[in-house]
Structure formats: structure tokens, C-alpha cells
Length: 268
Image 1: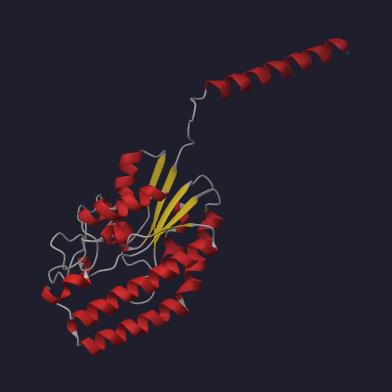
Image 2: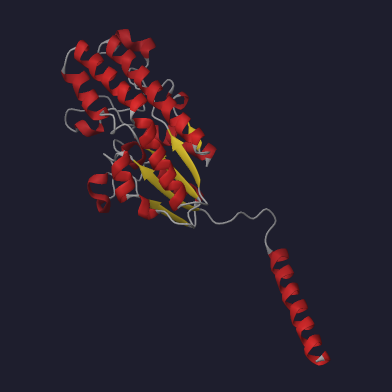
């Protein structure tokens, strides 16, 4: 019995020494591996930035989009690009959550514009009168404050459940127009542009509030686009493109790299 006890004590001591040695051998300040998943809509997929992955089909996942840039720059242990152009909160829940797991440590997401008819609003403002544009924006803003908050709650709750160990960064949308230059800028009226910028502020406020409710991080990109909006000489947003209407009002490659990427990187 004494011999058996001594053997057990010796084995325990050897195991403890091995664990201690392994801990000591870790580099000082070593960070755990990052497993990054990018969720969301066209502002995350990179529609309008070119360089699309053919394997992504109609999701228009761009190598110039901020998730791709961050993954290329930071070399995470894994990177899953699940964002898809045209996504709504509902389609994200149905088709993108499978990319998440308990091993996911970082999630980025932009979502909500398609829920409130962003594309329809923009088409109305481009093709119809100012009064029609303003009415379309007002209707979208009503949805932003009435139905969107609960939809965002469902998304963030589902992300938390699927990836309980992840930091979640919800990014907002930019204002589209530099109103200080509107008078000398062709296209929509200043009234249209003012209301569109106001709508961006309204929806971004909901993103911020939703992130706060769930203990997630909100990343505001509006200031980063300052001086590079539509009507500015060096713009980082596509204006109306009649040959590829889907690109309209989305960030260019420069907008993804110069605004979305550094804002996300500062919060990731």
C-alpha cells in the first residue's frame, strides 16, 4: 500500500511539472488563435468593390471587402466569409448562422438595410420625384424604429447562442452625401440627399442601441467616410451606375479599405 501511494504521488508530481513546463514555454503575451466569421449583407460582402469570388455566386463576396482585407492582414487561424449581398435579418438567420460555432472568437456583421427596403428607396429617389423620394424614406424610417429593433435582437441573440465565445462587432452604414457640396453636384435634389443622410443616422442609431442591449460592439463608419462621400471629389461610394444598378450607393474598393477596414480593425 505504501509503495502504491508513493508511485501515485510521483506520477502526480511529474504531471504537474509537465503542465508547468508547458505553461512556461508559451511566449510572453501570446494571444489565443482567432477564428473569424464575417456575416451580413452587401456592405460586408463588398458589393461595389469589384474582385468577386466566382464561388460566391450572387453573394458578390469581394476580395476588396473589409473582412477579406482584415483576414489577409491578420492571418487568423480560420476565416469564413458568409456575408451575402441582398441578405436580410431573416435570410442571415436561415443561411449564415451555420458558419458559427463555439470555437468562433470574432464575428463582424452589417444587416438591416434590406429589411427596411433600402434598394427600393434608392430606386424611388433616383427615378421619381422628390416628394416620392421623401415619402419612401419616411416609410423606411418608420420600419427602422418599429420592426427593425426586434429583428436585430433576434440576429444578435442567435449569434450569441451559436458563438458564445465570440466578440461581435456590428458595423453601421455611411452617410451617402456630402451636403456641403450638394449645390454643385448633379443628380438628386438637396432635399433628397438630406433625407437620405438623415435616414442613415436613424438606422445607425438602432444598430448602436441593439449592440448595447446585447453587450456587443458597435463600430460607426460615418466619420471615416467624411470627405469621401458622393459629391466629394474623391468619393469612396458608388453613385448611380446605370450599367450595374446594384453597385449604386455601395462602398468602392477604396471605401472598404479606407473606411470599413480601419474602423473594424480598431474594434476587433
